[in-house]
Amino acid sequence: MVGQVMQVLRLFGPARPELGVTEAAELLDRPKSTVSRWLAAMHREGFLARDPDSGLFRLSLSLAALGEVARASTSLQRVARPLLEALVDTTGETSNLVVLDGDAAVNVEVVRSRRTVQHVGVLGRRLPLHATAAGKSLLAWAPPETQARILCHPLPRLASRTLVDPEALAMELDQVRAHGYATAASELEEELAAVSAPVRDHRGEVVAAVTTSVPISRMTPDRWDVVIHEVTRTAHDLSSELGFRAP
Amino acid sequence: MVGQVMQVLRLFGPARPELGVTEAAELLDRPKSTVSRWLAAMHREGFLARDPDSGLFRLSLSLAALGEVARASTSLQRVARPLLEALVDTTGETSNLVVLDGDAAVNVEVVRSRRTVQHVGVLGRRLPLHATAAGKSLLAWAPPETQARILCHPLPRLASRTLVDPEALAMELDQVRAHGYATAASELEEELAAVSAPVRDHRGEVVAAVTTSVPISRMTPDRWDVVIHEVTRTAHDLSSELGFRAP
DNA sequence: ACATTGAGTTTCATAATATGAAACGCAGTT
DNA sequence: AACTGCGTTTCATATTATGAAACTCAATGT
Image (tube, rainbow over all chains, first blue to last red; front, side, top):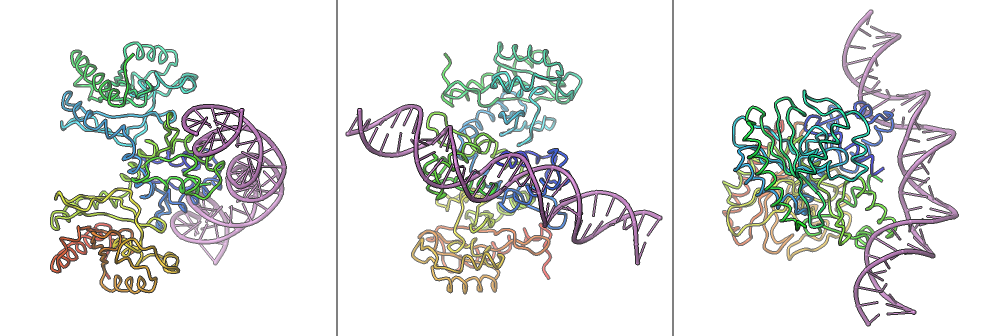
C-alpha cells in the first residue's frame, strides 16, 4: 500500500498538475474502483487536495510543507546551491542538481541562466535516464539491477539522436564511467545539449548529478570543453563538501 | 495504511529532522516491530532516506521534489508570495502564510523581516491552533467537528497568557469572527505577538491565514493598529486574487 | 421525456496483507 | 560472559485490499 501511495504521487508533475479517477486508473493500469479508493484515501489523509467543483485531485499543501521539511533537513541541496550558482556564473548556462528516483532522474535544484535564451530546468521534473546527460551519469553508477532493468529492452526515441539500442547505451555508460562525466545532444529534445558529472558522498556512493543544460546552438567544440571542465569541477567540489575523499 | 504513512511523515519537522525505529514507535504508541516495518517500507518506496551509518531515517529528497510540484501546482503560494513580501515592507516584520492541517496550523510560506531582531518563522512548522493568532483565525472558520474537537477539553499551557479554558477560547473565537482578525500575545512563546486574518477562496471558504509575527517588545498600542490594518488588508487582497467576492 | 455516455462510488466474495508478541541478530558496555 | 538497547524477522491471527459488477449522478443527444 505504501508503494501505491508513491505510485500515485509520482503521476503528478509540472505537465500534469491535476488528475481525475479515470485518467489515473489508465496511467496506473488499474481498475477504476481501486484507484478511486486510493485517491479518496490519500485525499482523506492529506496527501492530495481535491477541487470540489471539478472533482480533480492535485498534490496537497501539506505535501508542500513536508517537502520543505525534507529540503531543510537534507544537507545535499543546502550545500549544492552556492556551487550551482557559481557554475551558472562560469558557464552562463542553467545548472541543475539531479537525483535518481526509481527509474527516472529528478531535478531537485535548479539555478537558471541569466540569459534570455536559456534551457528552463523545472524543479520536480522527471526525466528518462537514457536520454539525458544526468540520467546517464546516475545510471552509470546505479545498482546493477537498475542498470539491467533499463538495458533489457529497446528505449523510447524522444529526439533525432536518442540512444534507443540498449547495447549502444551500455557502451555509452562505459564511456561515462571511463571519463567521469556524461554528455547528451539532441537526445531528449532536439535543441538541447547537456553535460553532467556524478556527485559522491562520504562513502563514495553516487548520490546525485550536477548538470549544465545549454541550447544546442551555443555548443561549439571549444564550448564543450569549457562546460565539461566546469561541470566536473563543480561535481568534484560538491562531492568534497559531502565528505568524499578520492582514493 | 495510507494514514500510517502520513502519521510517520508528520513526525518529522525542523526540530526533529531524523528518527530511529524505537523513538518513532514511542511517538506513535505502536509496537516496535510494526513501526520497523513501516519505516522500512517507506524507505523502500522513497518517502524516507536512511543514513547507512547511523541507521536513522529522514524525509527523502524525492519527497522534497514532490513538495515542489505541489507548490508549483497550487495557486495559493504563487499568488501569496508578492503580497507577503509587500506586507513585510509595510510592517517591517516577518509575515507567514498558514494553513490548517488536521488539528494544527502549518507555515507554508514565510517571508522574513529584514531586521536583525525578528521572529523567525519556520517553513513546515506545526503550531497549536489555540495558542497562535493564525491558529485562531483558522479555527474560527473551521468545520464544526474540528472546533468541537479542540474545544472539548482543557488546552495545554505554553506561555503565561495561553488560553487553556475551552470556554475562554470559544469566546475568543467569537471575537475573531466578529472582528475578522485574530491576535495573540505571550500565548505560544513569552516574547511573541502576532496578528492574523483569514484568506478566502472563490467559494468563500477560509483556506489559509495571513500572519505577521512580531517580537512583543515592539508592540506598542498604536503599533497593534498598524499591523492589524496591514494584515487584514493583505488577507483581503489575497482573497480577491483567489476569486473571493465579498457579499 | 427517455436513452446514452462518462465520471466517480459502493457492494461483496475472495485474496492479500498487516499486526503484535516473541524470538532473533548485532554492537557496545560492564 | 551477561546485559542492554537498537533494529529485524517469524508466525498465527486479524484486518484490509482487491476487482468485477452494479450503482449514482450530471450532461448530452434524440
